[in-house]
Image (tube, rainbow, N blue to C red):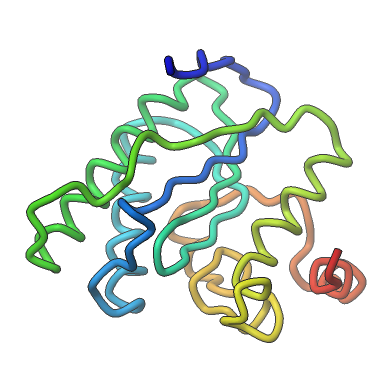
Length: 172
């Protein structure tokens, strides 16, 4: 089956997901994995100008909400996934692929959908039973404020807004 052709948009964000091969867990501690992920994102951002709005790292996949003003989603994802998989492969002594395939993407083309994508991304660890709420999961851009600073993330919301946090925490 051929790949879905990339719809390039400088205005609308993308919801991007990439999963490990065979849905296997990455074989390294989450703190170390988070460090490699953050470093890989920063290096990819240095080479390709994009805006990251939300990010969550799970044991075998990640979710990313990203806008590409220079229409370069493919280049950014190539750089990020390459660097991240090389770091994980090196640390875990794996010789095979880290990711099960190419990343999946959806274009987020309206505000209602955007809010639901935010909720879906941040609710992922809660739905998986890993975290009680979105603010207590440490491997997300919502709870790790350093990620905002290091990656100069642009968010569409105020993370101190109690009503927003309650809405994001509410299960759908």
